Image 1 (spheres, rainbow, N blue to C red):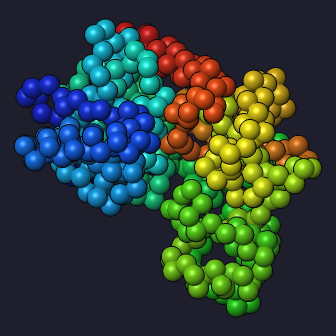
Image 2: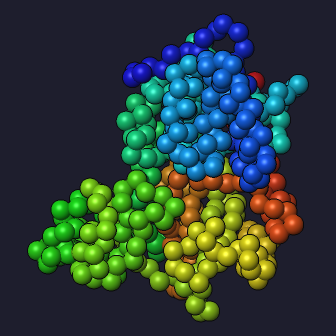
Length: 411
């Protein structure tokens, strides 16, 4: 399947799939999961070539933690059909959006279904493994390159560099070369000694070199000039804190290597970004045509903050703080870090991307990660998070408006 991506078969309509957003909601309820699962299994049993059922089944399995089987079924579906219409049919779509995607789990592509949920945008997902050919693809008003940076997507993004220069419709996030550069070390290298943005020195290195550092045969600074203990380490390709640890010295590094057999790692300087109250706060901010929007704020006693481990559901005080942050974001956090945000949008000239970030005690923007595939959604229970739906609705409306504005000249 290398080289140019072939167009889908023109015989009959494209398969219609339930899609990620609806299946992710179903995955939160065991009864709903079982009902949908049985229906999809029944369809596949009746017709093993039902590509739409296979793709939905793979998405549901991924949403419920069965990654290996989910990816296996996804591969089977893509082998049968590359393009799918996502969600319930729209009688009069306000925009037809063709999305170029790669095979993988929920971290592989921009999760557009969450961003477009409830809109009048017709979403057509097309899996590619090389530069697509416009002839024969479904008609559309706008295309979107949704492939995110990853180890596995590197060759694909390289092949897509410049591939959309002559595309017959506008393409959102067309800069595959910029997306490919969103590695942890690549992002850090953009902001050495920046007055407003702090990206700690980050090195991608081999197990052997880290073992030499742990044994005292090589200084840590040989990996990156300003690198010093304590550091944080993680295996290359890991996400959501898997394998991420804070290491205080060579002995801790040696113990870490003994527990993690991976061949390559990212190591970065640890920054204590705790507030005066001793707690840590991490924000997810997305940029739509350069304008920042707050997706969430996580408050935690722990330095390794993820929204799911931050006790947001258990703490009304944390939720109140997030609600206040969302209500005051434009005049508060965004205003304080306007210069840092300008630096980011200049460094990464993309129509849409996200960052995980925090505020340092000296007032700089601490950037943990930059990505186009961060999960941004409005699926949290409204009884616990009544403030989220209005904030996310503004974000989603801005995203849809940006898409339509880009498509307008061609339409």
